[in-house]
Image (tube, rainbow, N blue to C red; front, side, top):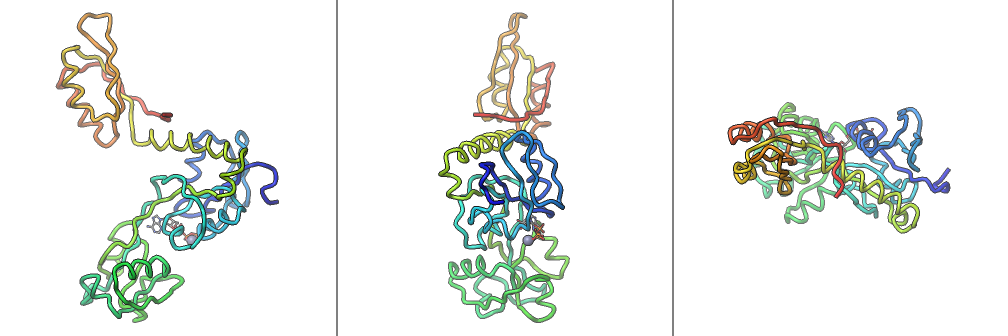
Length: 291
Ligand code: ATP
Ligand code: ZN
């Protein structure tokens, strides 16, 4: 059963907040497979890789021990488990924060006020490192769930828990105090797999594709016609990574301008381009950018 057939194994969260985007990333890398939550393994039809679907908490150990060569897991889980794996690539999804919050009426206002207080958490490792760094001596209460209830039950004076926004804390009558860790999903690898020639080559192929996809995400490709003399002005409007490509058109004095633009500034850029004399503006999605 273990990795003896030369195929890569990637451990993904079976069912949870990271599942859809992890699967989406692999598909965007061109991998074809049927993903069934019920089955432990899902083989890819067109790439030497099998998906192993497990609980997110188990992913760092599975990758460390070589049960899987690769894994996708939140940095929050990765930093909490003391495993030796290689972090290959931050993936830009599964963003969340590990925050310390206190009851609304608490007298705790700053980090130093946590001294000798009880902090309930399922992240004792990360929290202890943070407190040591800050030079604060507090008592860590290790919990296994329902952390937000700890202050109400008077089990703790503060909690250290994952939130995607401050509003979750506020809903539970808590006030966010400070951020201990900003987290996102990352691609991790087993260290020995990175030294095996054939596996390393397949991991590299996958990495190039993943980087291309991440690079293209949130970006559009812009094409437009413009008077040649307007180009310096157009260049200032397009906050592009690279300088735009400018191609002369048969029509004298006119050029075609091509460029990459970020989705979030896209409409502003379009309006300004039009005002600056651009016409026939075409916008297309970008699937990947291989550098
Ligand atoms: P499992 O059954 O696999 O153990 P889980 O309940 O522990 O699942 P999820 O709640 O699905 O885990 O969260 C998985 C990961 O998603 C978290 O470890 C974290 O990295 C990330 N995440 C993103 N946003 C949030 C959020 N608002 N709350 C909790 N986790 C989040
Ligand atoms: Zn979990």
